[in-house]
Length: 550
Image (cartoon, rainbow, N blue to C red; front, side, top):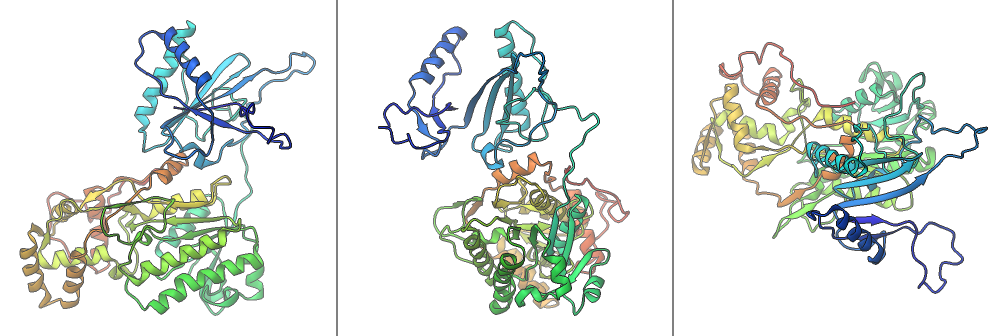
């Protein structure tokens, strides 16, 4: 356990801090025997441990303990009756940056306010499940109440972290006749006509943001036709000054948040074209921010494909990682990697930059609708090859993370509009996985006669399909032969942040996959499925569960 101290011992520092004004917080690392039977003996032993343990700086190297504890102190209001002081119902807001809460699997904070012990438990979901955290806190509260000879007070689940708040009363403040009002965030959004961009725009509007969209067009009127109902300025991210007219510049430069979702997402395209749209355009946008909107927070939409592939032992790829000795399968991955380096270099001088990475941005969690250019998507190209061949190679160990587009947009927007979100990298990626072979079985349930086979039988089936659909079959063959990336993506920190913001990914199901396949059929990308008794309602406009969000 890591115990935070009140100040730092200076007996042996030789006076080196005499000219410094500050609060030197330190920590102590303790190993506590949780199985001790004698409660009084255990308390005495722990007190001795705390007293004798050496102090360590807060940024001590090495893996941190999984549990943290901090006693903030005892707070009493002035007893002068003429003052009539009382603890306010309103909370002052977050006392710690979001990244601080997830340093530990769980952190207990305690303070005594007007004679009452008030504690809160902050935990890092999904590293610690909600049920497990509830059980820990319930056991703790009963143990403390038993020691005091009192009944355990009920605990409440706070909507925001209360860790570090001093005068906390131990309950959610009653709203009564007041409510929190924030000035709408002025946002400049690029890529609003794209698949993800359209959903980000909808989320921003729903959260009350004032959005101006940068859209290609010869005039603002022409650009607005491409995006009805939104505030649009004509421009081009590949041009100097973003191609804005004087009137468009006057509207765009009011932005305090810039969400850059525009990109060329073709996996196989001219490296020159990809560089111009996905990296050179980023440099132009950064120059524009410095010139016309200094201080604006940049939210750059990247991709988890920047992790590439690695040889040898598998590598973990977390939000803190970029260079892991990877190689890249496509020009798109390499260029997006370069764009991240561009943004990081820009942010290194103190500018606020947020990088959002996602893997496969999947069909809508409720409707199954996908992007207009579905024919360019690797997963759907593979699925079409399986349907045409009537077979799929068995890959029981291969898994997919389907990050629904509406939830990805909700996560990015929740972070972009949060006034205390920490700059840095976020993996807006579903924590749920689906195996390749389960997807094929769901296709069969949907009504496609696709069977799992060995590689030789699949190659023979694909060869037969190639006689009638040569390009489609070759694409499916190429994707099916790709090896594993050998990269383990770690999104646990971002998922814990999103969980606190009320955004959670729905787990993919056979019903959702059926909706996605039906949408692909309706737009003419897949052939019609054979009627299946398992999903008789799939063409009847049935609804599906939506992601959890505020």
